[in-house]
Amino acid sequence: MKKLRVLFIIVAAVLFYSIGLSSLVRNIYLSYDGGEKWGAVSKTVKFLAEVPTYIKKSTSQPEFMVKNTTAKDGLTVENKIDGISDMKLLFSYKDESFGQKFDLVQLNSGKVEKEWRPDNRELYSLAYNEDNPRKSPEGSDLYFMHPYMTKDSSLIFNSQLTSLLTRIDSQSKLQWLNNDRRYHHTIEEDHEGKLYVCTAPFEAGTYDILPDNQDFYKKNLMDDEITRLDPESGKIIWSKSVIQILLDNGYENILLNKGQFISDIIHLNDIQPALTDGEYWNKGDLLISCRNICTVFLYRPSTNKILWLKNGPWYNQHDADFYENDKIVVFGNDIIREESTLNPKVTPKNLYFNERRKNNEIYIYDLVKDSVSTPYSRLMSSEKITTITSGRCDILPNGDIFIEETNNGRIIFGDTIAKKMEYAKRIDQNHVSSLFWSRLINN
Image 1: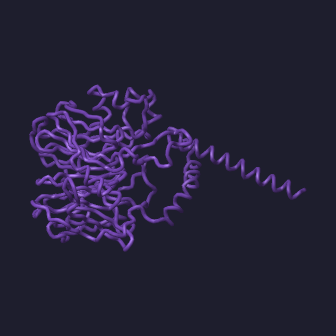
Image 2: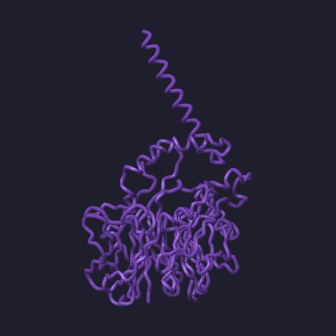
């Protein structure tokens, strides 16, 4: 009987301890200040709560390894494509932790023309900023995004959602590094040789559609900004909040169309500068893609005016581009996001395809006709192009299409019907590397 009493006390103590610890963890993680008022207790609790995650990461397969036993390493040509003899592919891949690399590949031959091998650990260490409320644990293995090559073969790239934008020279040596805010997604050159990058400050601005007390959201709201900077020095020239742009132009309904607000309301993922005048845009105008509101809009920085805006038919899109003089191309991921806080959830996955939209899609919006077409549907379906996040496309001069199926580690070239070429980077006999926003370069 005494043994049973002792066992009961032990079980009860463990139960109450678990309940108390769970409540403390919940209060810390859901508090508006991230648990700062708890001081050292908060850091200890967070560490203990995240131990299972660290263990899982250390014992599981790295995220950049994509299961694929069929794709050949490098370039595979099934049908030649006209007009690409001078075109090159700049892409990034990983074959080991802290081992991200960049290659410049000739598309007509598949030959690697140039390589960059930066010191990953050094860059991550220099970029780490304690002030970043969304920082990954110090020493984490992150990944570099969307390399931009300068005329002297330097590379400029960011590390997705972290405090890193950097430039390395042609020999992979560090030239400059910014870690003053979060740098993420695309890097694009404008008609004056400056760069537009997606950023977010460590602390969000104040908005009249949110609670009066900014302290409740300043570190939780992902306040995406359009940022222009000098590629030679990395110095910021101009920056503007996307939330503020939409509010200034009367689009509160886009932000609050369901009477709902989430911390990552915009999820800015592409800024495309107009390099030439078109029928509906001028040089210097910007095409902006906002994933979490399924919205693409045309913006003129000189007047702070939105010239055109469209919400869908794409879902959770990436990579909006100007096309010809009067059209816009959008890579629609066409996945559905489930972000309810209710239990049980609708689906065990918060990103999923459904029976109506089984794969990614490429949309062409005609500004003259106010109509949308999907000429590459057959290719997208036959190749089962289904990158859950990311994804890029470019229409080639002959009308063929370049597609990066980011999560699945494939680059596809094809026409409206079938694949013509494929590029993949094999790690071992069972895996290829995920990709990190490739770029076509015309020389």
